[in-house]
Image (cartoon, rainbow, N blue to C red; front, top):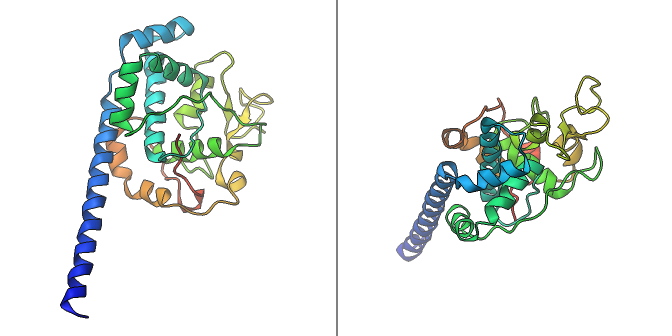
Length: 241
């Protein structure tokens, strides 16, 4: 191979590497921004006006769930990620009403404006849309839960039930468990996972990236981590709106 072609290949490689490092640095800054963002106290007051039963700690948990959702959308690119929680959706809606702050937040955390889409539950206890499947995979990957065989619910899927939100979306890992508080009335989270709900999907780069960047994400987001990431069997995974 001539020196000309070797030089050309080297230039292309250096450009590719520079682009990769730029993208990685930008994403790191975006995730840091999401983690450290302080929501205006008035947003929390408006959420409390709608859900007066919530304690201060529970309100903090709701906004942690909202940060999780923005994290998921950051990982998502431009495909749809369903919002699976009514109370987190309410917090999101109140945030959007602060239009200038919300626009700035979207620009710094996502690099684009994230339009609001209504909350979305499964169409039946065992039938999940692509938006819900994607939200499930992303939420599980974020919390190091196996999407195919979850041992607990990610926060954003469990929070409505946890806080007793009226008209909230209630999910259960095993809807056949008669001891579950959502038995007979909730949605089966186990049917969102890959073992039953993702049969047509192929493995994605997000799944391997989620595992390789586990230490990075764990350092940027609080909360418990499961023993497993999403795994290569979880199907195509980067969603967003």
